[in-house]
Image: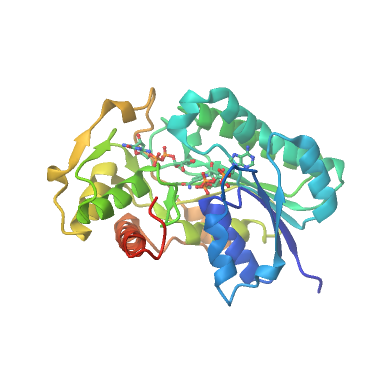
Length: 336
Ligand code: NAP
Ligand code: GDD
């Protein structure tokens, strides 16, 4: 059988890089959209080229942007993908308050541009939309696929547009278009300004004596944190079922930001009371207080279950950041 082709927007991000590895390992030809930047932004893909078990010759990168519809139209014609994973987004909730229009353009309209490109090409590609637990916002937990949405940020509002666009194209044009409503998922590749990575990176630097203080926002917020490599497997499974549907991925276990801090500092033999301070600069105009997912549907219908909960995740991330810093200090990698 001919090799399957997948197109990933957001391939340079945390999830895109793990998904590319997963699909290459499954024998796919993988195409990714990369934004032009003034310096290298494909660092998370470096492992693919260094791992002899991952067939990097099947990876193709294309310059592009979710704000550029003609580029997306041309790309769909060129690649003729079997599966499209729309992971590209301005994905930072706090930043979305400062860039609401840009966030709406990329994280909201970007999905319509891709869906229209598929429709115009009469493509029968299966489409995955990266939806989010931020859609639930202030609706109390536990949240499942039928829980009402009440987003609390420009990011959440943009993503709700993409959620309904995906449902609408499925219903209107009989497209195989699905939403993965994913709760927070993290890894050593997590962007440095998301809370878990901010904490584990600071722990490594404090332990090494490079820093002394960690300034935090609302540490009472509760999140359902899982491990990103497990979540990209769930994305893939959503596109392998017979009928398109929307699924939620979560661990079903929650913790406060403070609990994550305590665990991460303890892993490095540090006391957070000596180092953590609250800085109102990191508060948000509106907060999402409590996210806790019920992943029963994904478990029953996709056979997907999260294996790694927040406490083990904190250990994995601290260990990785300590090792990364050691490599940097030993001159094997540049310090950033
Ligand atoms: P991420 O690390 O922030 O990656 C976002 C990706 O989108 C990057 O590759 C980024 O490119 C790209 N991008 C940004 N603006 C773009 C534009 N204008 N055109 C094309 N690409 C653009 O995010 P992630 O954690 O991997 O998340 C992947 C997706 O899942 C996102 O849509 C996010 O909103 C959603 N999601 C994430 C979580 C989570 O907990 N991680 C949970 C639910 C949903 P650069 O590398 O050039 O910046
Ligand atoms: N980033 C950050 N920095 N968050 C902080 C800080 C801080 O210094 N201090 C406290 N927090 C709190 C935030 O207020 C929020 O309640 C929680 O930590 C998690 O923040 P983030 O890690 O930035 O993630 P998020 O939950 O807002 O959004 C992430 O998860 C969503 C899924 O629920 C992002 O990955 C989104 O793209 C994703 O959709």
